[in-house]
Each structure stands twice: as C-alpha cells, then as structure tokens.
Length: 326
Image (cartoon, rainbow, N blue to C red; front, side, top):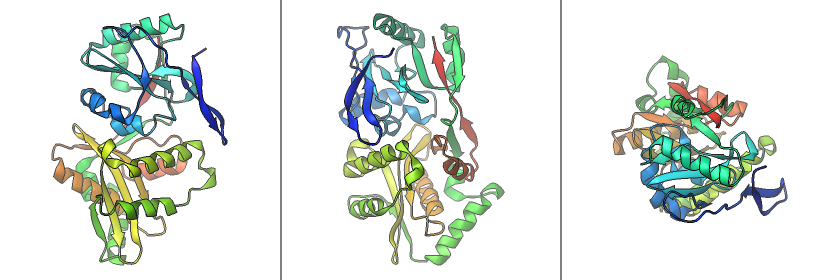
C-alpha cells in the first residue's frame, strides 16, 4: 500500500490525501521530498527546460496548478528534478514523473528504485511521454499502460496565429463573425491594469454542476493564479468589448519551442470570443517568442465537450502518455 497522509477534509469528497513526506538522509544521491510550492519555481525551471518532450507535465503550470490534485512533492539531486505524486488515472497509487535534468536516465531510475525499495512501495511512473518508453524498457520496465484521456493536443503555432487553411475554416468564420459583431473589440496583453476586470469576469462565470471534482480544482487553481500571476511567470491575453467588457482571457508559458496554454476562459454567449482569444494569444506570443513552433492546449481529461473543442482546432499531433511499472 502507498504511504498516504491526510491533509484535511473536503466536504464534497471526504478526506484529501497526498503521499506522505517520506524522508531520507539529505545527502548526495539520496531523495528527500517536500511539497512543491511556488517558491520552488526558480529552482525547478532550469530543469524543466531540459525536458525533451512537449507534454504539459514538464511545465510550471502543469505542475503548480495541479499540485493539490495530484499531490506533487519534489526532490532535487545533482541538478535533476524528481517529482512524486499519484497516478493520473488512480489517485490512490503513488507514482513519479519521468525525472528531468543533468543525471542520465539510468542513474535517475536507480535512485528511484532505491527509494521505493527502502519505503516498500512499487516504482511506478505516470504521464510518461511516448518517446521515453524505449529507454525505460531498456532499464527494466515490465508494464507499459496507455493513459486514456490524458493525451495532450499539439498544434502548429503559425496555424493558431493565422487560422489559415481549409481545416480551420470554421474557426476562421467564427473569428470573422466576432470581429463583425464587435468592431471595437480589443485584444491586449494581460497586465496589472486589466487584471481586476479579468478577475471579476472569471468570478462571475458559472460552472455547470455536472463538471465534477477536477473542474472544482481547476477553478480554484485559476483563482490562485489570478491572485498572484507574477509568481507563476505566465503571460496572457484579454479580449474585451465596449458592450460586454471582458469576454475572454487566456494564460500560458513559453518553454523552448512550445507555448503551453494553461488557462482559457470565455463568455460562451459571445460568438467567437474563444476563437478570438486563442488566435490573438498565439499571434502575440509568436511575436514575443519567434522561436515558438507549437502550441500545447493540454489534455481533455476524458471530457467529451473538451475533446470536441480541442479537435476542432485541428491538432498536428496528439501526444500519448503512459503509466510505467518496474
């Protein structure tokens, strides 16, 4: 059984648990995990930038916005980041992320093996990108299981910034409809000046009751980002009109050649507001970061509506992920 500790009660779902803070002697080559916090961002960012995958699990937002849901703790050894949490498809099973940083993968896995043996838990990696599977198999992985519902949707940045091409014809039509209906609409960067209006817009949005617990966590995470966006290091865009005020906003981060879109909210009663913010943010970020080639709009978590919305932007790739057991 994985070692878990209570972190309080949630009236909607009972006790909230996270892997307990298993400690080893803080010496070179030993893993010493502590709960991930915003103060860790400067330390972990250089290692996240060394990840060779474009999946969202190796971004600041992918970790920090979901730290409570997936119960992330971290340890840094030899400029390598180790993340302990739970399996994405089973919150009762302790699991680790693929280590990233300076250590060879063989040494990182050896450290995780020793840690798990010392604490009598199986070594399970979750949300492992597909390109890492052969190397893990060579190191003794015995079970590889696809993670249904957790694949990331990847898009060409230039396509998102232009909506050019037949495959984006519907999106382009929605954008043109928005522009025709709202000729004085403004698409601008998210700043301290418009942040209060963005907060008010988001707080006024009503969430459907059938969305489930993940949606509740995501809403709380977005509210936390809006309270202190400077600590996350995100960039964002806001769409507003004279008639409605803010109708959409988005936030994300650029790592290497990929823009990770962590937050995107719109007024669904304003036709084309979603297309306007998605298009405007991609164009804005391409101008700021000309090295960008891709946009990762993350997974759909098994939500049929989200899946349909993400497919409508014509992804150039769907990034598969796996659970790996040693």
